[in-house]
Image (cartoon, rainbow, N blue to C red; front, side, top):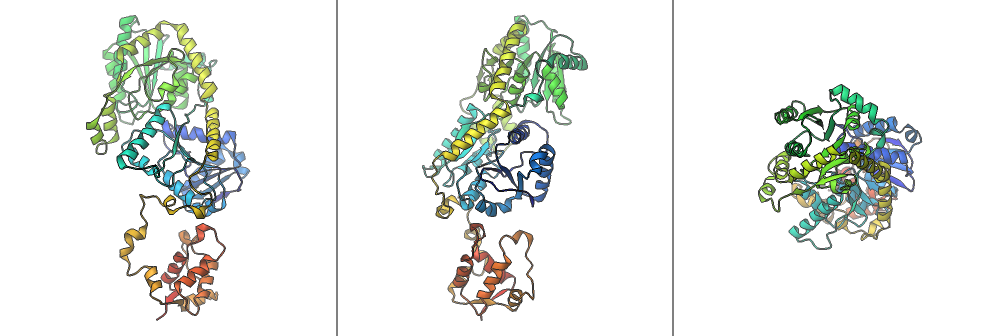
Length: 565
């Protein structure tokens, strides 16, 4: 257990660390930047993290100490384990709980809050990719009697809002669920960008010149694509190559430009080399820069003249690279697709290229739960057509007009700096949490008055409803038999301090030595199970500790109680 602690009235909590291991791309990058921006602004009195294992606490403690030493020294962080939630929720009034995605323990958090918290605080989480096969089942978990209007899935784009709402609508219809089966509300909360991580206008000339020198690019136009280098995710680059040939037919001089493709490429993957060969066969200069470090990434943005993202893949939902390119003062050519519709103002900050998609995909729909995700995403993406002639026209238009490039780049930077920095996104969440706290709630504020249907998720039947047949008898049958329980020789010795029970670490929260001694004393001359329960429930304890049957059975198990003959 790691305490650096205080308990205050306005406390933020999470079941996720936000700092994660792995390549800083996509979801991991967004989560890390969010928590950094939140803690830099520091709008709460304390930050509580509940994690699965002690080693998870150790890793997060190291990250928090290193990145926020003043907050750490001031005792503003509390790091606890998931198993501590009942105890802490019973004693702490949280302002909100925010998770890093809406699937990993989201409904578990609802159950725990509904069972133990003294108030129904907002439970929020942002979306990332929304297209994976298992997400239908995950969203179905959200629809139950324990969801409230204070729970919210924060979709990063307007397209994402429509996707999540469509999931809920389809699932309700497919399963015949009425209004009693509630789901979280859906609101838009975009991702952001940190301008200091990208080239400022005054830095671009020197950084760009160094980058061009490093890669031997010369003074020609540089078109940049920054994405996962894979035809199975993000985008298919082949239509982009065809579009450049269309642009050449309109007047773009062959050899006067270079297409740079940079981003994540798996070790041993030859696709980057394949793209270079295909581009060379078409007479297109192509530079591939796999797995760039932060400085290389920044210098490529500085060196580029135009940014291109012809996304065609459903796993793309938002488009962080749109923001990065805009902050780097680049005009953007993007497909009119997913979250790009929000991020690029056509004709002002860039050009959107029309896309055409299928009406129905029954073959792929049936395969999606059987084949790997990369396969069904590829099958879907190969049915999404980015208009190649229009893409070629957009390339030629920006290549031919340096004034338009500069004006669009400046307008894009101003727009992002005014609305899409992480500082702005944190404020959006502050406004969202405030609104959710004020929302009417279908569940009683008093935890004792909340129905069992809001405490236990329907997808998780009670263990003893399922496994009860394993035992000779349940405790209820034993109680109904009229036989009494009394302390054993060992139990009497424990009560008198002559012996000490072994209490396993994970059981400590359920077995209090004080409650155990009161139980043993009550059973000294023999007592019915109902009388022992009454003794235990009369003890001053939070709801999380009120489990008399656990203690009675534990004492029987360890020979501290025995049945009278």
